[in-house]
Image 1 (cartoon, rainbow, N blue to C red):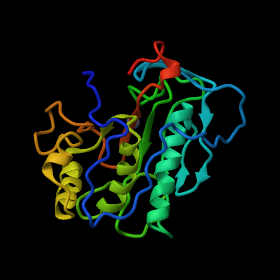
Image 2: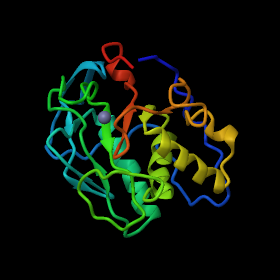
Image 3: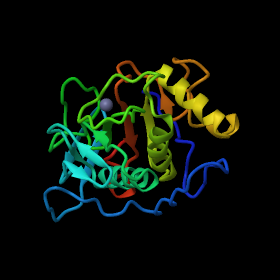
Image 4: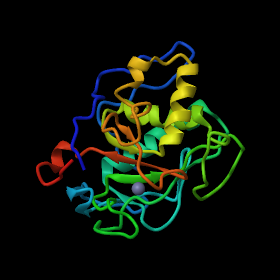
Length: 237
Ligand SMILES: [Zn+2]
């Protein structure tokens, strides 16, 4: 995987269109995560996302403000869990009564390889369901197209996450990128603002933007968070 410097850094603010709903500014540092199992020591994300391990990870509770978790591989690095919980809560604040965000695989308790994933090894990756326009209480990922994508709500989550400055990649089907991008342009976002974020419209094999096409991401998207300073240099972005 090509390594790029993520283009969004604190405290740079995205230029939001005036029509955009209110979004709380991200805390400068990840808040404390809410873990399903109490633990004493901070997490350690070791190695790379596709060749790494996790120590003292935080087990994501199966339900929280604005989200539900599915599956057993729900262990993450503290900052990763914290930011997912923070961003999900932001969506819940903006869209009261919304169906919850569905958070699927993060990592195994001690990290390492989990089929069928190449990455998800060091607690900094998460698979997440798109929001759908049909009011759904689904507890699983569902095939997403331009017809059922709730671009506004999905973007609300992604935008909150991007504000943290700690996202290195988001893998998203190129067709869904197109739907998201066009909806944002319609809502007043500018091409210049979106260019560092979206690979679209450059093409699905072009190495540009945080949001990249990867096969198999039409029913969920994948987010990767950067290494926290405390885990460096053992943690590799
Ligand atoms: Zn994934």
